Image (cartoon, rainbow, N blue to C red; front, top):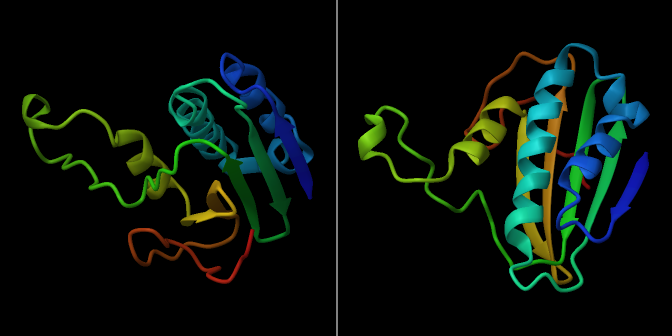
Length: 152
């Protein structure tokens, strides 16, 4: 397991993304590396841009676990409490001019990952995403994959 701490996060999104992508767990993700890259970019940029509106004491911790069957990334920040999964997902069947702004990034994360879980614990936003490496199942909207009992 790799544990990373980034502080400050504001203005450092690209360096943060590069560091995460260069970890052994992520760099060796094979066929799912492109998916992991998109998800990491989306989540890191959101924390950097929105979690700390006052810019005070901003940080992001990322725990990365990999086994033969899956890769797990757990993102923790002490920013404004925000559950992206509680937000209504955008209706992509509407014409562009009728859609609300926002929400496409988290929709992409939900669709591309096999499990997406949020909790607010100990004053931190904790968003866990899991990508199964050998699983083709599709289940509920926030839990597409096989492994339902992974804990961050």
